[in-house]
Image 1 (tube, rainbow, N blue to C red):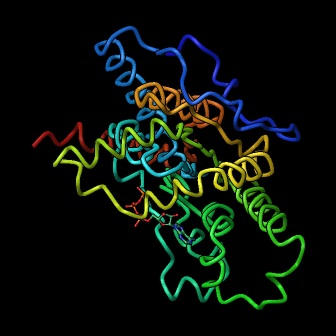
Image 2: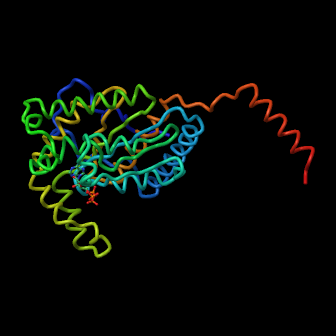
Length: 294
Ligand code: ATP
């Protein structure tokens, strides 16, 4: 199944300038009605689930899905809605909040590396090592907690080197059978304001509200610049970024589903081939079971 649009329009093309401001946060609905949306999402989920079973059976490759976005962009909801049909044994979600003391005592990729998916698994990062070139870049006080030697931090290329490190890390993962796909859920400040007010007004959503979310609004331009630089420099053919217009959560979920499905289809997943001995075992077992019905 496919949406009536091409997903390549949201893929960030390597080596091309990107103007995030020009990328829409809102598009026409990709569904005709609530029923149509539900039917589409449910079909995507079923197809993703079938591919995930194959990924699991083959146990050669892994898929890492990275979700980034400003607060309220809908990362958690997208992950829940899109992945809910997938066998939980084959899928692990990790959320990355502020690092612990132990994590700060290691290099910046360390905590992400520990949570990478095994072969056969889908790993989902709700925020990720990308925070190291986003919040850490936008807020100098966060960088100051990182216990780095001042001479390293003061280097002119500090941020471009970090971006390079991430790029190379993902190239390394690709060469080792882990496919990385990254989603930036792109919301407008107006839509974020609406969602924050909704969190305050709706008692069932009050728990999601953090005063710190307002602080990030003050740094909106800084974040947009950091995202732009990051998306531009770390999108690669094997590990692309997709900028998902996310003012409409349903559209965003459909786009994310279609991209995941497209990625799985391209991974050339096949059931593992059996050795002669395994085939012989199947024949022997079949005879044993057929000859002994009770
Ligand atoms: P979310 O905003 O993702 O819905 P949340 O509000 O429940 O999550 P947490 O998951 O506890 O909050 O933490 C998210 C916060 O952690 C974000 O503000 C993010 O910028 C911050 N964070 C993530 N990684 C780092 C990092 N490496 N250094 C500093 N802060 C980080």
